[in-house]
Image (cartoon, rainbow, N blue to C red; front, side, top):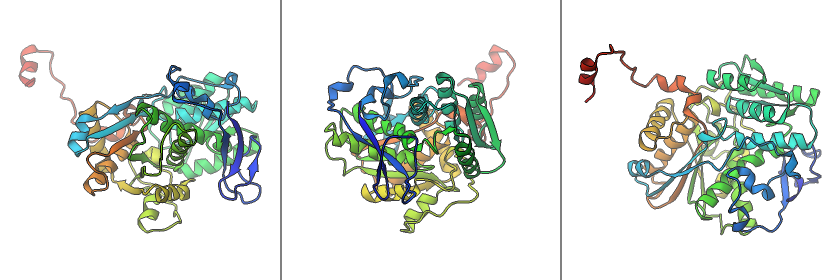
Length: 404
């Protein structure tokens, strides 16, 4: 078990590990700071195939407080056929679409709900563009918590159905994600609800760093050259960087400073890309996001400024892809590797393709492309570009003529 405290990301003031997420002095975000116990590669070797295998590096004090639905340790697939198409010899897809609720959000939701149990909170909730709604509701159901979901009313039906199935109190907000986030923040504070991605955020973001831990272990403790990360709020990219740095701190990895982080956003909601391309340190919010990648439609990304710092730190890039490129990329990944992703994963693959075309990624680079959600959660978008099946009579001769 690691000893933990909280530290302001801005002014570095330290606090005890309590239910707190904003610095009293400068109102900066608080991050979990660790004193890690000694670990080695063999520490994790024969453990359960979930992200809880890294318990010593996570912010839960007692194992009895873990609320697990067996998420994590998802495949890192060597994408040979896609690599051949793109001209890459060492391309890997980190496929988080196969988590229990079918997205990477099972990682941060699980840490946050476990921490809510550790804090003896009475209920949990989240603001969501869809995937976090399902992940939080599932963990809340497993942990016995009432759960309150605040989400825009226009998200994909499959995600609404999923969250409702777990028994959540689902509030569909007539507005954007940023509207839902603002309302969740106010209600969470006034009613003492553990809103996982707001007032539990310091702990919540720690779940996403397991995407670094797993990739490192699956690459036999090698550091990737290039990482393509889909970006909404920016918390996941920041957490992945933190994860690799922590593995270096505990001597499980060599120097991570030569990694290249690539932030992928959809056109129509790409405020971080816009700031990067104009060399601005200010991320100007997008008031009305307009993209097929609804899970990335966060117009005012909470960690936007920190993503820009990470891109500078890791010699990175930020690039966007439009709706057509996203849908084409979904089909390209599906037809080459048999992985069906939602539009957020399509954004990653489309941006990967652009980076290769622009000469930013070399043929022999060890490349990890993060695919964060399952295509079955967002079929409306892809159906528009798929050929509609022809209904035929149950006649062997007629159907045989159509099978070439």
